[in-house]
Length: 369
Ligand SMILES: *Cc1c(COP(=O)(O)O)cnc(C)c1O
Image 1 (spheres, rainbow, N blue to C red):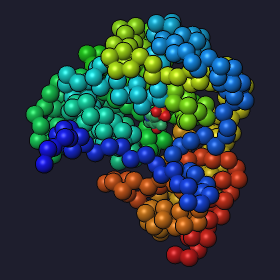
Image 2 (spheres, protein in one colour; image 1 turned 90 degrees about the vertical axis):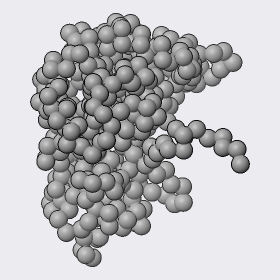
Image 3 (cartoon, rainbow, N blue to C red; image 1 turned 180 degrees about the vertical axis):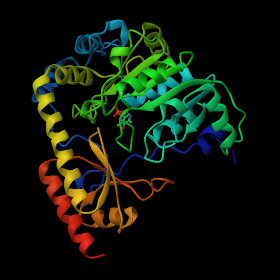
Image 4 (cartoon, protein in one colour; image 1 turned 60 degrees about the vertical axis):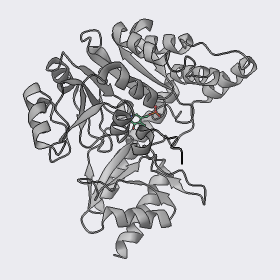
């Protein structure tokens, strides 16, 4: 039989997104989507663009780029627009990481190792502290070698070409302070430092202010979480013009029209509605504090989160069991059956009604164990 598949595709283990079930109505607290609809202006923006769909979109996304550059006080030449931030993270591998090894925490966004494998980039997993925080001081040249030696990784050590940090980290929700990010960048000036700020609007401090000072910093953000546009697929990166040019070279070697007209129009409209953004963001932060307090009362260990989710464990009921029972009750949360975190659940912050239902269901489940 002829074998049509490459070795790469046979060996690759793709990312598994959180489940999107249609078998019944669920309260979806498993994929960190925003519980509020997008700004009403998004609808208008998209609607007016419909008549122009016969034309290709602007490959530079200048309308959106200009709005991002104003919002973050950077030049247009410092902005890259992508089809979701996942696409930008993917482009970063051939653009910045591929010639060496990329270092990222051993517990983080599980797409990072998937991209590394796809782009055949070796990676080094840096252990978190016992409290799940990131030790920025461990990101040093002496330490990379030491950690590589201690790891089960049989591959030969290669120069570390880049560092990939999600801030706040996923799925822990813990944020690094800006001064720690700066220390990390300073201690690694010969490496590209990519900060994935998918959750930054829920309480962390963005590193965009450091972009002018450090040429090795790339900050990546998304419209999927804080701007309620996971379904539109829009992300952006801010960095030195040389880094932006590198991303453009990769993009234009793959697909020049990664963003469609509706996405450009919708995302631009969302960015301009600052009032709606502030309102929904604050509701989520306030609901996060409410849910945290409720769960602490029920003997949960809740890791202090700066994101739109919390990472929790319970002293009497196993996370895997609680995950199953909640699903039977129509509430979806995220469970990762992986070492170190297999007794934790990641729960997305929903509306106040979601929060009450969740707490009620959890109370009933706990009473029965
Ligand atoms: C959700 C998420 C992304 C991806 O966002 P998209 O813009 O929807 O592709 C990237 N990084 C982290 C850490 C995320 O949680």
